Image (cartoon, rainbow, N blue to C red; front, side, top):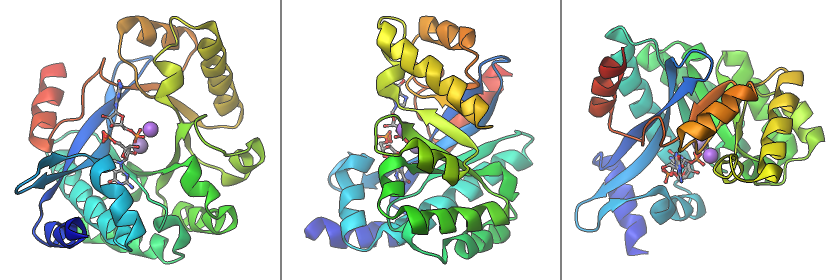
Length: 253
Ligand code: G
Ligand code: G
Ligand code: MN
Ligand code: NA
């Protein structure tokens, strides 16, 4: 309860920060996308991770404010880097309250306009369980997001309860394979089968497929063999601050 008041104050006084994790095209090795991951630099408790405060935000009606905060900060920081010549898109995670709100697309449209950020360079990630809270409403909100020109991704695919029927109807641009399958890819034939089949399914449905949790060169090479589109994970980089991201991108170029 105390933490909830602190979270309200933290949002008002910019204590929440974003770390960015790059995502690479597996065929070329090029990085043109990052995922924004929120952290709370708490004045007394130290660095708090999403699992420490997102459930609280979601259960106390702060979910929409938190997303608005993260979105604005991501558009500002990545917009800044785009103006310095980095060809980057940014992915922001949506929470359960976001997809229940039919006003979300117009809010996001205004946020893009405010920061003069091209809609096609913003991607919104939704997890399977967020979708399943109200699939009908989610379909409507996702259609609204497509109409303003932003891209969409299904996060943690394979770990939740989205049916193939929903996957078809959702009409998303990208599938992110849950890291639990990717991490054992090189050692477990069953995980390899799941990843291979998901890459194939995504391609046939016209979606890009991203593997999450790529930790080793061996996994990267296996994914290249499966013709997976993109990789994200510690092998490429851990999530880092916006400042560190600039240096990291310069070092790679
Ligand atoms: O690194 P990591 O601990 O950041 O992320 C843990 C989980 O928290 C991931 O599932 C990620 O999708 C989620 N997450 C990270 N940042 C955000 C955010 O800004 N909003 C929402 N809704 N989820 C986030
Ligand atoms: O669910 P979401 O995909 O948005 O989760 C991002 C989370 O996954 C973050 O907590 C991030 O730190 C973590 N993560 C990113 N890459 C890796 C990886 O290669 N291995 C592991 N174990 N975790 C990762
Ligand atoms: Mn995500
Ligand atoms: Na994920």
